[in-house]
Length: 240
Length: 389
Image (cartoon, rainbow over all chains, first blue to last red; front, side, top):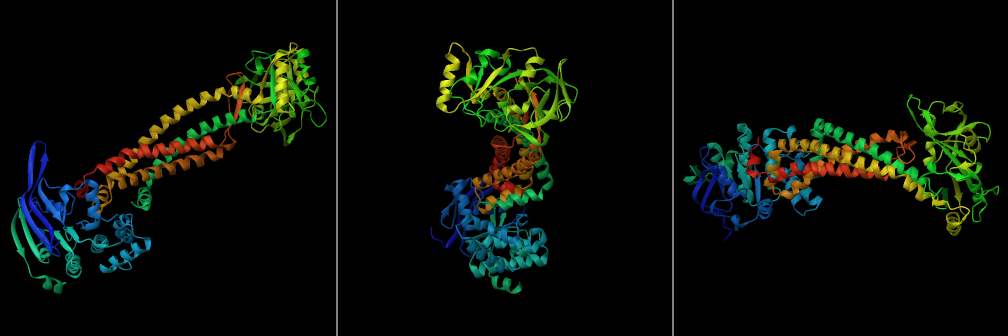
């Protein structure tokens, strides 16, 4: 499997069991995402976009079909293996930031590095680089409650990129932000995609946020209904 | 690994819950430490009471000095035997002693049996830790109706304080001329009077309870025991002092068993308190747990983290409980010796048993109290946990 196809889903079906009922969430889905793509997933509630994101991020398993990410078939991995794989390959950005409230910005960003063998000094360098990249240098000793929503999401992005993963997954990253902060976060994601060649998969309800992506997928009732490759990346960066 | 500061700061953030759990576990460690501190005090008193070169001579078949009786004419021959150590004045270190166990009134009006020991002048030499407390009078003089009282008893019995007159039954009364300590040994549960006076007051002339003997050496000790036990003129029991007091401390075995059962039950109760706190902690941090799992922390990392938090919580409580026992180092507890049915006083002792009890209880509370909540945390489905608001 070449790495030019960063993510490859083949005949993926995902169902959930509720009592005696089997509920289909994704049905026979095929998808190829090249490396360095910024993909936006849209669709109504219950269309399966977050489930698709979770499959790509290694948080969930497909009921049928295969999910191959960066050359690795996620279906055949044990819980321990996939946990380690996530720590090395995926950066997570959540709608509600999911920062640890009792840890400072620095300590939150440092968390994923505690799973590596880096020295304390190297960890510090990496954390400060990540905080600088999201424009939060000087805020490293602040606790989440001392930051605005936009700043919290920046810390979360710094935490997502600090281990230099190839893939960033973002679940409604601007869903809890005002328009100005949302624009800033989206610009930051575009910069990470363009400047550092990060593959980004973003779930969003916001059409304006989706405009920043290089490709737009629409899901409905567990199926891909629209796939649009956009060429507005330069425009998006320019407008930020 | 998840950093320890994550757990410590969470305990600080939930300080009300943390404090309440600390107080609960602390109270349990405290009460168990008191119990085991008294057991340790009892065992210590028996341990320090025995010198390896000392023997107690008693009637054969006697289980303690209180039910032993030796004819005075026989007992008086023992100090003349060879191999007995001598003091600076050249007196043989062999003391005839007579025990009486009258009923005496405590300061609170209750009554109990108490050991009154009739001693010879060399009796004090046989107890190297014996001393009259500074500013607390002097040693008794034979034939003057005087007594010395242990510091543990002076405050507990009517007429036992310095300068008072101690009345025992109809005929006996003694003036308290000194208060003594004896290094925490069994003598600290006794009142000492002149043996010959006690003989007369209790109408037990011609008899003594025991002879305390110190040998010159281990070889002399063996020879002395051989003579006393087998020579036809004696045919008495010569028991090494350490073995005698070890036997006397059997009553502490009951306390240890009872104390252990109580401590185990209390610890189980405290485990539920710790578990309750940890369940609440984990419930309120579900999304954090999901986030850490998503970031790549393993189930084992989380298990260790939450177990560690529970152990820290209980350790804080345990330290609080231990610290609360420090003011109790002056605690003296009176109970009955099951062999002699007389009052025995025990000083609370903060030693290895207390430390071990506190350590084991704290660890058990922390580990078992935190185990099930921690297992619940590690078994959480990541996606469900991440959805928690």
